Length: 436
Image (cartoon, rainbow, N blue to C red):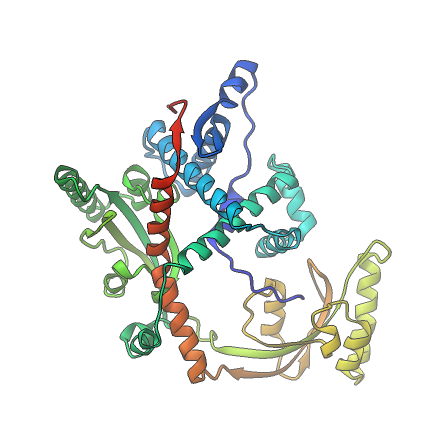
């Protein structure tokens, strides 16, 4: 039960959805698909990449129940721009020496498999059944990890938060609400050239028309796909569940005053007109602040130890613990979790964040001072003990850290958009073949 507190960001969902579709058969078609579509600095985007992304978009739209799709060229143009942006970011990452290690990639895939209640081997079988090799999937995960890292580096250079900012935020109503509610926000961006009066007027008219249609009951995902130029357009404009501090500051104040299903008036900034709809709202779990002091013993199957043998070994240890054996001593002697064994199996205080779902479930169903029964995760066979429970004591430092992180998250997307626009403007981009 190695505790991995890696961020479960949208890239994981994208990696899971972007399963390659190989449907072209004739050599003429293959030649067209292998053709260069766009030159991006010293790299290229091929027609096959664009087509694969388009097929994935169609699959996602079908699964989401979206039937009123825009013209293929409109979607393809957005896909091309996204691929150009990815190429530029990956080139920036290469210049900074940013890479993802094999261990980081494997950990990310293992975490994703756990979210789907699968072992790593089971998830590999699923990938192969859906037409993607494990190697291809690892390459996709590596790419997304690198993109995530370069975005963090680039935005960190553009975000400055002072001690006074933290103090002011802690005294704001946002800080009081941030731990109690989450919001699912839909976002559409009607972009415009702020220096062109006609362009601005046209964009504003389009934005107001979109708002009117949404208020009359138009499907938000369909409207986002057809009108939005934001990076989330092809996902229906859904920003996912977010706490207040994670909502872009441009419209955070508006969101917290909205009712579910309500569409706000267009909000303008330098990028264009932003349309937001509150898709859903939920209160934070009452157990969010509850923490458990946990220790565990892990026995892993291996080349020389079958899963059945590992189960028999952990079951024997469980019997010893039930008879009064010292947990710490048995953990030091037998546990195969290198992060906790020497500490007597102590995981420490945890609210479950970063732990496999099966482990969290066992923690929640095990009484204080009691042993769990033997259970299995992708790491092997476990037994755990809940030593104690508490409601997290948020010290002043912890509250300051929470506020600092909130301020950073609120500034992140605006800083990211600014950086992406800058590197896009500075890049050499030449379209070789138009998509249609």
